Image (cartoon, rainbow, N blue to C red; front, side, top):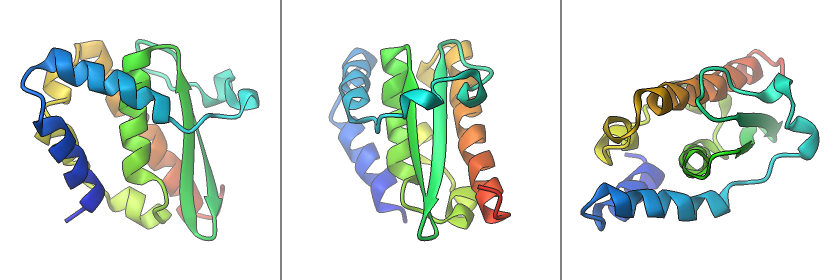
Length: 138
């Protein structure tokens, strides 16, 4: 089992309604690792998101580390969760990772269709970074 995903599930389980969960997501946005301002460009922009989202990744000692930013505060909270789960893992671990916390906390079913598409686009981009690193192209 994945301790980080389990911890996220536990954190969200204390809230009964989604307004409180959205407030929690907003508070998580403050934990988002800051992206280098030079990476807030179209090259790092995620296509398919309703809001503007930039994601970058770097590899250090065989582990991936992500930074990101968004112009939407709930989206920043969502990407903060994804980074929390994926940071410090090898490229292979990121590629093989099953993100079960998303369904367990009800995130995907409580997002608008465009935000749900954006969530999938963010995950896809993070896995593409992992694929590039696995192929030694990062």
